[in-house]
Image (cartoon, rainbow, N blue to C red):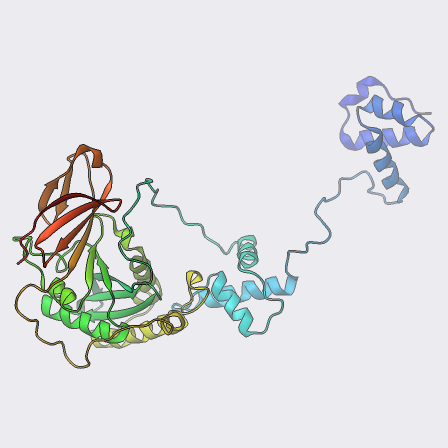
Length: 394
């Protein structure tokens, strides 16, 4: 009978299994063998059982992966997901995320249809997912919510200048109906006040008139830099049409994140994905991309529906057909909303006019409302009025 010694603890694991099973089969007591090799009786019996299976590699470690994975799709489904992903990635305008892949599989009649999370896991396993670095860390400061639930809101952003090879520069006014993610593109050589007003008018004829229009703090949206009390032509048009403008916080473009993300899509899937022979060709292609986005692009936040499908459920009002009418003289009635972060100087910058507030509002967002009928501005913190003063709108 094989006798094990205490110094045998230094042997490797495979040799330990050979000696322990040999001693056990030679008639040694299981408890004595297990104690000598520093293992349990259960361990000894497991390796003795594997020895009796008659396999020459019985002392080798085996994979502990489960034989069945109920949550994993069949191999042919995984191959199909990978093939669809690579096919979609070759088309510049087409989405290629998990939602888009699932939609293609549904059109092909794949059953059962894999879930979005499972598709993402398949893409990760095959190295087809690139992780983006998070660029913005929330500071935990509550941002004022101005647009009430159910109200229609447009997000505006002028893009440019962009340059066409051999045909000069251009600008493009991008407008997104936040409720449905529908967009309207208006490319122009310049964005002067008259051109911008015409672009807005054409945009509203396609998207409808919103209740609110959110934008950044760049001209020609803002009041005159020489006279902050004088409204710009854009503000006059918005107020005349019953639209309340909203200016986001200074130097925080992510507050207009819906249209900013679309601008990235516009650059990657449209403008930098093809060549345009002329500005006229770009204008025509922009309308095609607009229609494609609104009728084919799918958003997970919309329940994997297209913007046009969601937009068909909205109740909208449209401006009259035809060219833009002349603006009436005088100050149109309405309200202008401005969001500002109060810093250590305790000032709220409203287009160059700086209003002082109490130290208690340092490093907080305040919501300013300019009333063109009452000619005053009111500052709110968390919906509570904190300051009011005259604002002689011109």
